[in-house]
Length: 381
Image 1: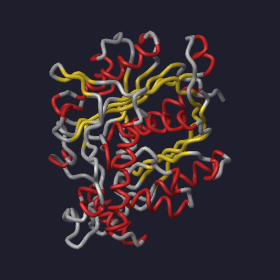
Image 2: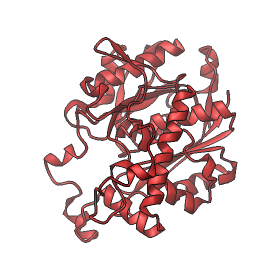
Image 3: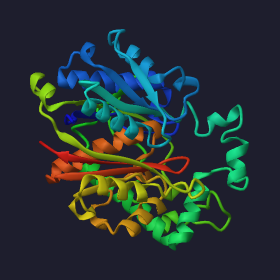
Image 4: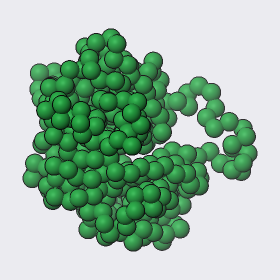
């Protein structure tokens, strides 16, 4: 089995809903990171075997195989293919996993993985405008309950006993960590500015500096009248794109590139689709067992902040060190552009590992329908 290595990773700044990136088509936003990736590495795009691209709501602007359209928008040769992957919020993490698996199996030598979501232009839930998601058999199996992530977050908070105050404290801390990371320039190396109307967009714009549990206490619950989940302790609706270049160590050497990290292990798991968001717990257990590592061997954990109870429940069940959890903030602070979030988390994971010289990093994402991906990477440079 060959090794798969990441040689570079880039992302756009994350735009807030109806913010700076709202006027940019998903294909053009995708093309921006594709072009940036080859410009930074000097790789001839014509030598790329495939582009594996995550996107969740594949209608409207994001329809017609946005992965392939992104390749054409980037101006790459027409013989370069592209495919679009949908594993809900983990779509671009699955894209990374699938690309690495293909390299390890010897089917690809050089591949780009990443994703996009422009939620300002293709709203969350837009897929419900035609047809009936889930179908009668699945709905009957679960007592007619229509799966809802916000309701799942409420159920998780109740099951693990998280108070509104605890969730709001976590959310405020996410903003504080993200602000510190931005101010320290942690994201600068992998963030590629987007020019919009003659101005360069350079910083994640969802951040709310000075956020506190006291301020968040004024927000109304979103999913349950006496609930604990609201807009302030949930991930933000956002726009963004990210891309990684994956190859073998030998091919990287031939191209004059230095691998940053090795794809160590990956796993995917399912869980209760009504709770929906607990999948990262069994996925983490599965990837650790597969890797031969313990939770204490991992220097940093990126657990997507879909809602505050998700990383907190993960923390409670895994026994992980809370100081290693999402040290640069997360989606509560800077946003969750669904199809791009897995690749964005990977850029964040790499940034932390490189700045602190941490050997292993773990990333996991809760996903619609109760699935989750978990990936471990090993720092090389």
